[in-house]
Image (tube, rainbow, N blue to C red; front, side, top):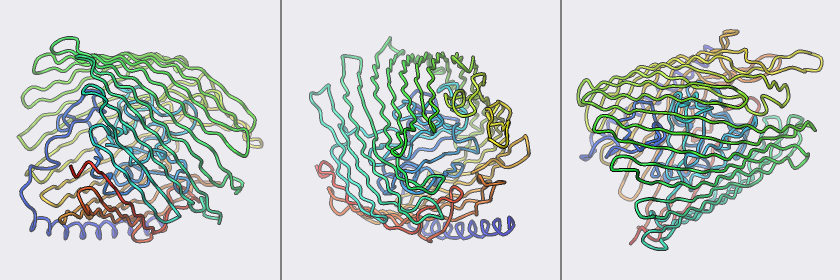
Length: 617
């Protein structure tokens, strides 16, 4: 059967390549002059914690901008992330259900998720609730693949996802309302205003309600989801300094079917509050102090079970542009965390402190580009960790750069690992080492090609060891190890009315203890995104061909078939103020699984109207 699935995957990839080739032939025939791929170089902050042009960043990155978000009419942030090769998504059912993200074959808890730079990964066994972030509140999403623990600390082994919210006081007001299959209703309002020339206010609200569909393949009861999100921020210029105070929260209820096939539901709430003060320290030196607070809570409504995390963080950063060659960054971070849970009457609570310092040097001299970063972390229970990144790139010509990257990462055991079911307070951190080589080539202003090969080694992975097979009692131990090897390629095209991107990955995520493939990760995937502007209309086609995956099963893992997923999108700017957006999800009506015995959406249609009164001014 594996050969059959492989054949299906290859045939699907061939069909996609043929489709793309036809589209690009048309694009080359009709394209108008352009400034180049993506226009002026974008600036990102996640890879280096310093605003840096993306073409000066050596680490592999993905940027999903506001235009893509508006065209996509996506239900949540993961609907956008999954159409990028090397990012595997596993979801336990429909809208709002628990979602896992695997970057380049690493574990789901090896992805650090930030909202405006604030860590939202909980201190318990739960995953970062990225499925609760509505796209209409997002300005852009930055994804950095590979270890970034040297800058961001624990959890950043597979990569970092930074969701940056909208700046309404700059963009103006925007209202959106939509409806789609599964009785899905959405509405949002984002905007802002200036109190004075020096003070601006950003505001945003978003509401989503969906009747959903049965979460389990053997169930017939629809399980819905509702989410109400709020965002507010104040920006004030204080002479040469700038102060930003911001708050974001998502609250709602998720219905699902439990292990015993009983309909249950839970209330969730995730809140971040932060204050940033940016200030100059000289002609070429600047500082930033950030104080942030996170609350993450899940409460079961049919029992007393819960998951709760509270985290307070202080972050000090100093950046120094030392001449034309070096850009130095120094930082110190301290956080206090209280995490607790109740699981079938077993109550757990743990208080954890962590302190770290880091230094970074970005070097640019002629054809040479390099980044060096080093971090020391003292984690109260996991001990100390030294992590680093060493990256070097050389420009062979104005259009071609080769690079080599190396780095380490770590994940400190969470409170559930230490004190929950099977808890072991003596656990140490999971640790990784990553190597990558690659080339980036831009043969013309319209085309960009990227090719890389990577290897990630992870040791001291935490695994549950059964001590009594009659009661399934056991203990967590640092006993597992893994290796992920792969090659990744991407090609981008932008000229006049055409935008296209193809990305592909082949990886081998392997458990070294029993030589098995790591669960819920495909070995191969290909993604295609194609957009065409026709006057006031933008048409889009997003496709993903994914190979088969292994998943949890009893008494042994099961194989989930490969699949081809396609979304068709359209955005019509009816007037300068009014736009209509539509999406046909799962165009081929593919029946597929992202998690064993959990349903996924069939073909569905979603429509929305967007009203932006200030665009017409």
